[in-house]
Every structure is written in structure tokens, then in C-alpha cells.
Length: 251
Ligand SMILES: O=C(CO)COP(=O)(O)O
Image 1: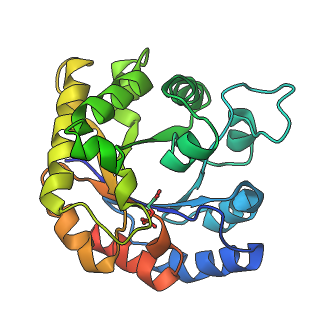
Image 2: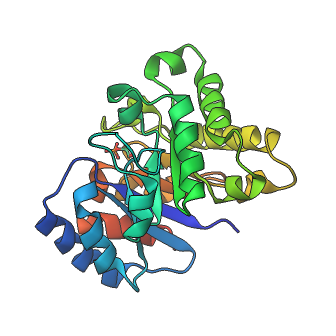
């Protein structure tokens, strides 16, 4: 049975005090078990949040990283720095980074490999634009992104990769893909993973949906066969709503 992974992507939000207050409110209510709760926070908050999360059922993720261990990359943060402070997960290739910071499938692949080289679990984001969906290009785009992101990984590493399917037109717009449409893409993505791995590897991979997920629609999304969790932006900012999303994973 695949675990359920609910990850809150705060993006560029919260002061340090707001971030630590959030953890104080959420940690006592995080259920653990088969449901994993992850907070993806801005770099500057990571040390404090890792400290808060120690011994709890909440994990802490970075929202990006460089693929090199160190060097002349002004303004960047390396995987070594993340593991050094106890971060366990990292979001890679979010559509906002692909759009505003020129992330490519190649850099996503380099970062995914670097994550594994340093013991970090990557949450790899893929998704199509509205134009691509309307042109029936969704699976070409998403399948291509997935294949390129996973290129060169071992089967074992693929089983540990979390894929987040986030249709770009559903992010922050209030428009959620219908749970059936989201599930169809997640199921087809699993087939693409099966093509590039052996045995039953693809059945073990956690595939999240992201894009306007909220307490009102999480149950239906999680009831689908191939949706194993959610990567949540706006609705992850308030402790109450994040806890509701995580609790939905235990049902
Ligand atoms: O981009 C997202 C999560 O990474 C989704 O954001 P929203 O949940 O605000 O639509």
C-alpha cells in the first residue's frame, strides 16, 4: 500500500514567527502512520522548522536547491547545506521555477540526481499549461517531463521519488482539475514510469495532485485510484486547513 503524502508549499510566504507558530499548532495534530505531512518552507526558516519538527510527524522540505555541492553560485543553496541542517525533502521543478527562473527538464534531472546523492527525497513537479491541455498535449508534456526527470535514476531511487502532478492552469486559480481528470493523468504518469523501470516499481511511486487543493475537495481527490496525496499552496498556509488536509489522508 502506498503512503499518502500531504505537502504544504508555502512559496514566498510567512515571517519566521508565523512559520514557527504554524508548527506549534500543527505538530500536536499530525497523525503520522501511513500519512506523511511535509512543510515546504522558505530557506531562511528551515533551521528553525527542522528544530521544531524533531521527534514529530511533520517533515520539512526546501522549495528548491542547486545541484552542485558548493561553488560560485551567488544566492543559491546546495543539497549539502540542506542535509547538514536536517532537511529531508526538496521540491524540484515547480512550474513557478520553470517559468520565472528558467528551470529546464535538464536542471530538474540534475537536481533530482543530486537529491538522491545527498539523501534527500525529491518532490518532482510536472504539469501542462492550459494551451497544452486544450491542444491534447497533456500526456506528451507530462510524460516527457517525468521521463526526463527520472533519467539515469535506479529503480530504487524511482520508488522513493515523489511526483507532483500540478496542471499549471489549476495553480492558485481556484480551478481544480476534476478528480477524474487528475486521476487519469496520474494513472497515465504511472504507466510512463512503468515504461522506464522494471517489475512493479511504478506501483510503489507516490503521485500527488496539486492545484487549488483545499479541505472541500481533498477527500474526492484522495479517493481516486492513482492520487496518493497533494502538493498544496494557498490552503496549506493556515494550520487549521493544513491539518484538515493531512487528516483527510488518514481516512
Ligand atoms: O503550486 C501549488 C503547490 O505547489 C498549488 O498552489 P495552490 O494550492 O495555491 O493552487
